[in-house]
Amino acid sequence: MNIGEIARLAGVSRSTVSYALSGKRPISPETRARIQAVIDELDYQPSAAARALSSGRTRTLGLVFPPAGSHYTDMQLDFIGSLVEAAAGFGYDVLLAAAAAAAGDGRQGLRRLVAERRVDGAVLMEIRLDDARVDHLAAAGFPFVTIGRVGAPERTRWVDLDYTALVGSCVSHLAQLGHRRIALVNRSERLFRAGYESAHRSLTGFQDACAEHGVIGTAHLCGDDAASGEDAIDRILAADPGTTALVTVNEAALGGLYRGLAAHGRRIPRDFSVAGIAAGRWAAAVTPQLTAADVPAVEMGRVAVELLLELLATPDAPPRHFLLNPPVSLRASTGPAPAPADVAG
Image (cartoon, rainbow, N blue to C red; front, side, top):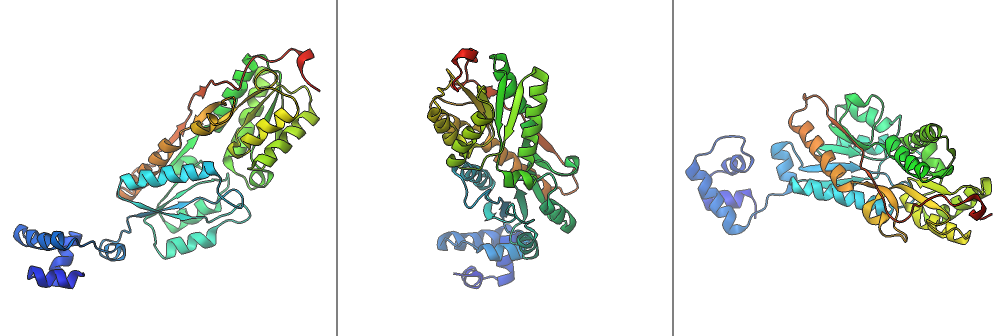
């Protein structure tokens, strides 16, 4: 079934059917009703390509979300799902583009996305402090928002977690429990060197909070997998056996961190406390449950989509941004610091 067949059955021209579908020109109520009756009877659905040609819009948003490693982690897939669901609520589809792996700047993939106009706008994730993707889209005049802050953040639309403040809150909580030697388990060396803003802001928050509370802090980079988490515990305790707590921003390594502590005879939270930033369902999935600032993935996906649709509707409106600072949810993984004689090693 196509527009020509609808026009024949409704007794109108093809252009009249096209105008009725696109709304580009006024059609009399009687003619519109006759065309709609044929469409309803035949259950006609215009193709996405046809809608894009007639309206100049694809009703599709691009999600530029490079996997941090060789594959997406379960936590990253949760984030993707939340944004896809948010877009669907506004009648939009999402095209996932894995442009910009950590080793490159990703501009080649973005050039195709922009040149071919496959999407109306883009949401960029895994933002770096100096991000060539942002520069490219801004220079091309292509609508985009970011989950994360970059460059001059007041000039772009974005939603982000306040990693500096959240890591600081975790350190403050542990310091108030009496912990004086605390480690930070950050993202991987590759991502840190690539300038991932969450990794750098986390380190800043950790160092500032340790200085504020008079805590001895050591920072460690860690790959996004369980084995790297176990290795991080080996390195932490080898460097300072007196460490009694850690803060992690690496969800993917969380299970390995727990296993590594168990292998060293450190019981959570009796001998060693763990806090961090993680999605609520992942914080609740480990035993004991993780004391953490819960990542509001659903809210962040919804806000990013709303900001992008606002930009598409009113390109000249002043840019808005949201810096989220969820509270640290106290669960079972943190407790008072053990007495020095009780610390293993």
